[in-house]
Length: 421
Image (cartoon, rainbow, N blue to C red; front, top):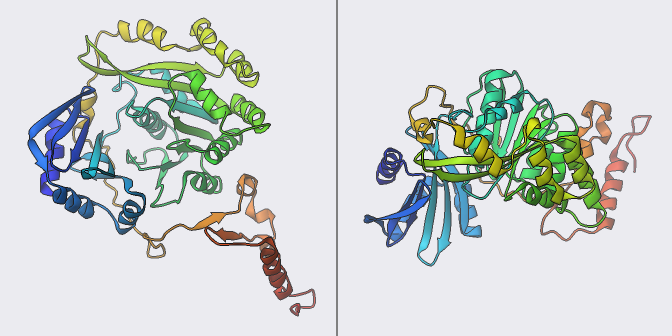
């Protein structure tokens, strides 16, 4: 690791800085308590940044950067994990760096409402945590998953881009996959997970229709599914889910979501004067019969009224949350206490299998679907259990596919043991 970069991260932790921005020939920019500051005494040259990035990235990540002109990745060192986006600008490469605690904070340490601990007992359904970029969505989800990890013997699979928090298995067995390193996409990771016997699935971001549809199907089929979404309020979040498809498909999605969802949390980080730092302010929507009905009937404007009248069911608008929870707290936990060296932080090293090419470019579209994934392979005969793939950027004619199929059929042995023509 570049010593200068290493020292910068350690200094940022001591000064309670949440984000760093490095760009060539310009002072260091950093964010503390949500406010942007600059340090004219710290500057990096363009060539410094090029060398730094090259030293941090794998060959595959370098390939992504060269082709896409940006790349997301995360790394751990000195009991701190950082999430980095390297991107191309008028000044060359720039880095946006988010500091993450290596020790996963719990719900109490994040000054969150204690009712969120109830989520650990859910056996199925969908839990959505929404908010703008940098609002702490991933940290809130990590805190809840860590509570499940601490209390329940279940199988948890996470699909993230990139992996932010590294979990150390406790009562639960946890497997983490990073998009672009361990799996080509969120939707492929979800499809895989349905064959991997999970109890809990975390999808780092519900960003496209296929991922949303598969996540809903997984939640309906008996899994507990966590997902994050960029949305500013409950109505906006549900609207985005419902409108991920067009036409008649919207009604199907509405009914699926109304049936599957359990909790919908919207989060903002707000500076609280008596705390002296930013604290999460939430709105919480839970799956009551009136909420489910408003979703099915597409009457989303009724949600805020339902939340106001359902406080006894654990629902809050942000205004009520601040008034009835935050304003009544007499003390707050500073989030940077989680940056201390923790015995529970995961020290497990990444291992690259000799059977996997870590620099391979994924160029296949899998024709398997959700129903295939939920089916039991043992129920199918070996000769019928085949997976066909179509390469991207390849001109494929259906006639060619059928001819290939016919050729394979002719090679199969008949009842007498002889092969076809």
